[in-house]
Figure 1 (spheres, rainbow, N blue to C red):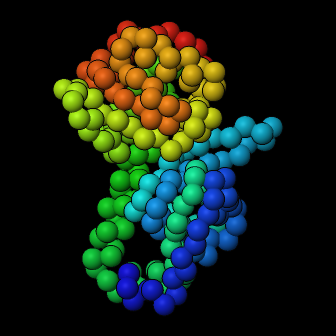
Figure 2 (figure 1 turned 180 degrees about the vertical axis):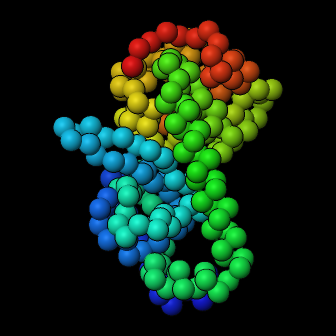
Length: 216
């Protein structure tokens, strides 16, 4: 990547900024240095679908299409490095390690997409939310000292982002989180901090066990 530094641009965005618009010419490849991004599609009638959240180290713009397939937005303050797509592809062609890293990145992205499609096929709203929390725990959980079974999740996304990602309404997300807290499965420290108190219980719920019954 150092050989590309001459053409790289360091960019900073604030919450809600559009970094790449769906349908625009795909001229850059973006690497997220800090912050969180969301990939989304805005549907006719104002509906929004959030397909994925991206965290530090993620790349966007690797698709072989000429135009960006999805809109890339900042969830909060974010710092990215933009590389010329043409120069990036030319550089990767002559670097086996970079090509291997890109293949791993694309394979992981495909696995996340498949997991998300499986999640959306789940019938219960509680099942979707439990699965989402466990996935965030696996990727971004921080051990909470003093608890035998507890991980603190600092979720940068708000309830609206979660709802649009899980195919639910904001009201349903809020109701389910409250119900999970009453069942002592989680604790809500604030709007963005969730403590997972019973991972086994959440796993049982995520795999179809008994949980709060709320519709989307």
